[in-house]
Every structure is written in C-alpha cells, then in structure tokens.
Length: 324
Ligand SMILES: O=C(O)CCC(=O)C(=O)O
Ligand SMILES: [Fe+2]
Image (cartoon, rainbow, N blue to C red; front, side, top):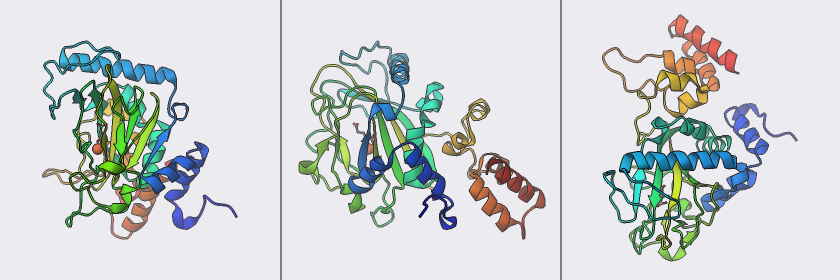
C-alpha cells in the first residue's frame, strides 16, 4: 500500500513526503510522544552556516549593547535596555529584520518542515530572537517553567501545537551551561504549570552547538541556571498558527526586496499573504493571491466562482495552477 498521495489529505501529503525525504520521522515521533526533540547538527545546517550565524548574532549584540563579546567570556548588557532585565541574561529581538542570514534560517528545510508538520502549513513566524546567557543567568528554583502557548478562554490549550518553538543552539547545551529544561510529556496536559509544578521532573536538553531543539507549544520548559563562564547562545525561532497574533511585527514591515528574494513560503511565514489589518480601503487581495498556498487558492477559487469577482477568481486559479 502506498502512502503519501491520499486525496483526503491533500494538505498533509507534501509535508509527510518531505519528512521522509529529510529523514525526520523519528524526530517527529519524539515531539508527538515527549513534546520535544533534538535534531543533530548534520541534519540542520553546515558548520559554515553555524559559524556565520554565531558571528552575526555576536556582532548584532555588540551593536545593541556597545560591548564586545567573546564566547569564552561572560557577557554584559551594556546600554541595552531590552526587557526583561534579568541577571546574567538578555534577549536580542527582531532578528529577521537585522540581517539576511535570518531569512535563510527561517527557510531552513529542517526547521521549516518541522513547523509545517506541527501546524500543517498554517504557521507564521512569531518572533526571531537570541537568548544571551552567561554565568549567573537563572530563572531561580522554579526554572521558569512555562508553556509558550497562549491559553484559551478557560485557561486550557488545544492538544494541537498552536504555537511551536525551536532553538538553534549556537553553543553547547549542557546542564552546567544552563541547558533548556523540559518536562517530557507535559505537552499532553494542555495547560500551564502551576508555580513549582514539574520542577522535579524537569530534565536538561543536552545538545551540541549546531543542534536544533524543537518543541510543541504546550510543553513545559524553562532553563537550568548557567553555572559556567562564557556564553550560552541560540537563535529562538518561535512560530504561531496564522490565526494568532505574532510577537514581532512582520506582516506590513517586511520589505518588497525581502519578499522578492525569497520563495512564496517565506511571504506566508511573515504573513504577507494575510489580508487582515486593513484601513478604510478594505482588504487588498493581491498579496494573498500572489503568495497564497496553492492548495488553498484552488479551494478559494472554486468557492468564489459562484459569487466572486471574476478577475480575482481567474488570478487565483492561474497562480494555483502555476504553483501546483
Ligand atoms: O532558554 C531559555 O532560557 C528558555 C527559552 C524559552 O522559554 C523559549 O525560548 O520559549
Ligand atoms: Fe518559552
């Protein structure tokens, strides 16, 4: 029996095929079972890319803080006032807009495929940040355990991953180095931990530099205190379902150059195909047609054929056929 081409799973088929092509089956199973996974460096990016990413992040930190950074030395926030202001730690924000390497990163096949899996192609980038930590960086005894997913009205979360996160490790993650702390299986509880809850079951996510740690949006996680000298760095790639608000503002702020030099999947990641957020002129459908998901465009064109503006229907059908 052949899997991967059922008509009733039109959206899932290409994602399923891609997971197999990239050899990510067991990592997807880790996420389903335990709520997180660690993908080894060789399945993520080249060591040259890792090096370039580290240098880029360090140089942005230098610009924003006024300090120079060395991986083997502790850091200092300098004149940087980004919140939260915690000892031994700061976060750099809005990295997608800071350097082209981050466009390359969000389109990384492994990262993109995992997010596709978790959100069935409905994901958008919510924020792209870097956590800088050094000796003394700590969330205290509770390890800062939380779920990344915003709860629904009743305080609960959907069992589906409405948000998903992935940390590209730019330095080694070890217990002593302040590894990510996770409570395996906690994504199934579909709620945030109560204060102190989960701490005894938390485990460090051990991963060498270059690994990608990805987790389900409901997973309880935080970090162990950083007890060694030197930096613990990452690029945190936080995604959310497109019906949710993003943390960082991309939709109307990404430049046309950024859209032009990337595939339509990039435009969708930054919500450039999303017509929401209009003013008195009302919705403008051009961008949603230009960058929309071809399978969805095909469905929209079929639905709109009965009552829609014939010109719009024709454009949708044309783009859908071109990109099918
Ligand atoms: O690495 C950490 O300090 C925790 C990160 C975290 O909570 C997140 O990226 O959502
Ligand atoms: Fe988090």
